[in-house]
Length: 393
Image (cartoon, rainbow, N blue to C red; front, top):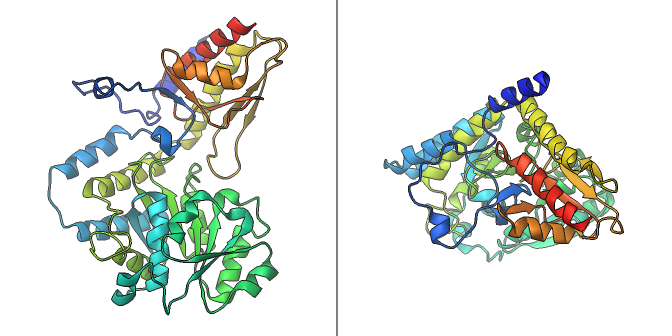
């Protein structure tokens, strides 16, 4: 018991896992709007509002909200600081990773040519094709297609070299699909260099671990993007685009505050720029080993609560690339516990307090993560799951 108490005390002393700390709002805004907040045992899904920003990030955004500053100069300074932190030639804050994909693609297509910038997505007389592995096609490549390009699917290195031609503008790599394609990241970069085609890596959900923030840039990708509002815990509407200096310069000319551009609507305000920088600084200084220790402890709390049900089994899965945190998968014998994982999910969501688990929950298993849980919430999740299973026993 003494060891457990010591561990709990040490966890309590860690930097808050994204918590805002003491509530300072005098109004219950969500309640006024008829909304119920929930305990997040799902993860950093955009539709679930991703992560919570630390107090230091909110303080930086509040600071920026009270002062005027030249936006272009602020992007210059923040981008330079981010680039120095991550070992990149240049960087900028974008409107999320999806916004980074649009402005990055636009920059590759137009360079700094103002006439081309004004014409997008009309690619008449310009390169118009993007190479991508068939297994890497994903919903967010719409952000690339918005620039008017045509996606050309390949599967092998030989196919890629045959498909590359005078119309090829870019090679897009979806890092979450790293292990699903026949060409790995290093091979993609090597082929891009050989063919003299810029390579772009969408690594939106690839933190943690923190080392990945610099890994793909060092590997040689010409552009890399990360989401700002997931593991880094910055503004959800912000992201980071880093890479070659001339490509970042061109990307910036294709978006706000410049008016006649394809990404004018993808504004990033001064509050988001400063908040993103502070979030990154904090993230790089975190004790990531202590975070993992805390997550493992929270998983253990939940599994302890279901041990009384003999038919319940569990597995802890840590995805190798994106969302690299413990995913707890609970399964049970439906002849012993007459309730489906989908029904458990529904009851958790509709209960008090409301609890969200991952949308990958299905008829075979209940799937949840713990890295967005705030102090004391793992115990609540454990208790509610046990209560629901007990009614089905």
